[in-house]
Image: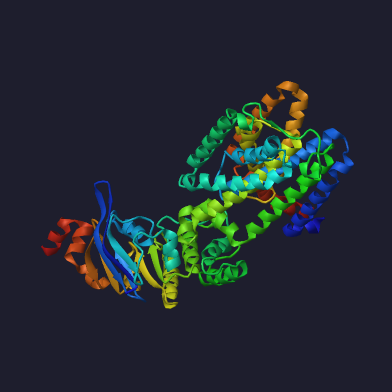
Length: 241
Length: 330
């Protein structure tokens, strides 16, 4: 088991954003994480990446306990992540952005630049373009390139494919596939069902801080609890009539 | 010339060479004591602003309390002389070590704060030190300390004219800039700029943010302390206000911000513009000149904040391609 989250909970005051969630990811998988807005996916994600300290529960990565480790320790261990709102280094070029990631495993500048150049090419970005001049799709792509350069074994993608045009979406799906083929295990939070359907074999559905269903994407979209979570009780009644 | 303008890299190299030559020749061409004094003042301002730039500009941690390091650097050599009659030059490395120590002590808690809170914390600490030093008789209290009136040897760094100071200061400025240049190109430099942009994203990529910030502050403190020492031994006098006063910190911030914080030559350019301006204001307005300085600083802060947050370097970076295109068209 590459990643194992056991009974993870995170409370903000009285509000339990994540209320005892479990997740186990095997090496080489692509796992989807879906759920309505406010279901606690991003908070759960932040717990996995070390950005948020869980109130209870444990997170194991490759056997090591990372529950209380810092975000930089997570990165060193091999957990990479993107952000729901892209946070690129805007004062730097695309290449320099990717180099910051590459420096984690390549401390010398020339090695880091060499490695970063390959990643930039792979992701179809332009190395000398200022990050500031990129639009949202470009920034999301740059985030993926940057984290990829840091050599993760597990990649946590937080809605990295949202807000793309259909053409861009196909390219992005192909990119995620390529990253997966490079041997990177992926957990992906996404609202777009097309992405989930094409990329993942296994999906977990979040609602109110809990995993309410899991299985193949086809099974999950037919699950009564899932339909209810997304559409409310009325939808279920209508369907059965 | 047109060819040079077409290649930004070589144009930049040329202007750096020209600047270096101009700085070396300046006191020989302008041998008048007044002009040499302006030159020395400029160099000192450029050193401290460039030192501030490492943590304030590149890492974006805007300290408004760098006078704590400057003052420490200025006090220790004169304290060595006053207390034990030791050579002032021996106080410089000690001042640097103490400043680095202070930087670590200050940095550990304050780097948990971000943005304005960090700036305010640094102001508070510097002001506390200023007030404390002003009430401590051992270090001269409110009156301050004096250096040796006559040099007992070179090790007192007490010279008659400004010329020796000028070249010592120039060498230190070169050292600060060379160090910054080297750091800028290494992993450390990339990490600093990443932290400035988004500490959260930097951490997610494995950047040990707190350690990098602390290293930057320590290095910045070391150079700022050296600048303070140079000021102390050159002036031969230091008091709480000229060492730890808030104006000392504000000057570093303004010089760097005007030229371009987070750029190699930004602080130098800022000092190149503001030091002559300040001198002119002092000359024109006489005793009331120091008040005029505040007014000018205030005006500059407003202008930078409103129109050019990136400073003159950023403005140049945007204008240069346009000028180049015009040169091509002509």
